[in-house]
Image (cartoon, rainbow over all chains, first blue to last red):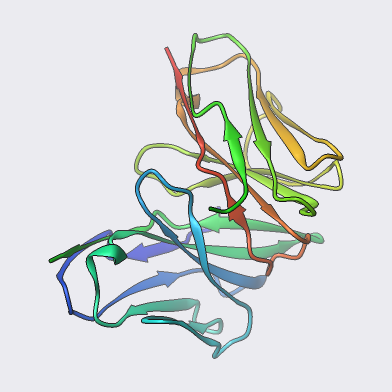
Amino acid sequence: ILNVEQSPQSLHVQEGDSTNFTCSFPSSNFYALHWYRWETAKSPEALFVMTLNGDEKKKGRISATLNTKEGYSYLYIKGSQPEDSATYLCAYDGSSGGSYIPTFGRGTSLIVHP
Amino acid sequence: ETGVTQSPTHLIKTRGQQVTLRCSSQSGHNTVSWYQQALGQGPQFIFQYYREEENGRGNFPPRFSGLQFPNYSSELNVNALELDDSALYLCASSLALSGGTEAFFGQGTRLTVV
């Protein structure tokens, strides 16, 4: 059983604060790491797909880094806004006999207070 | 909007019954994956279909089966429903089989087994 751990489980911040979350995953058989944002009553939305050690990706105020050797990824949100309130999921794609089995963490629930 | 739609949105079934959940992928997406999300957990990978063939399966019993059709729609069938099958079921489509490909999720079907 592969363990993908996300921390913290939940986070309350004030509007304007910057914040970050962690996703840890197995460093073996690594193929890709995904970050998703999941707002209530909507479908999960892909934020980033990262495959290379040292990858850094950025989309507006959100960025992510990847360390495949030690098995972790950070997601950063700069200047949080209330509309950033959502659950942030990471998913590790491990290669297994030619197919890719995704394993999700439980998510970090972010609430941004105005 | 991801362009991936699932039906029905909610469903109540009795233990022992059978259920079929449906997913309509984005046009051109030849890969679809199904996930089960129980309360308080991250999505758990059930299986993936590529060009109408199963390609990769998570730790789910054979009473969970699927079909993928040439028109980019797919089904998840669950036989002999158990109370623990109560969960949100998500499908996700992607352009290719590669694990590093962006996935587009539907909003899910909430199944309650009583």
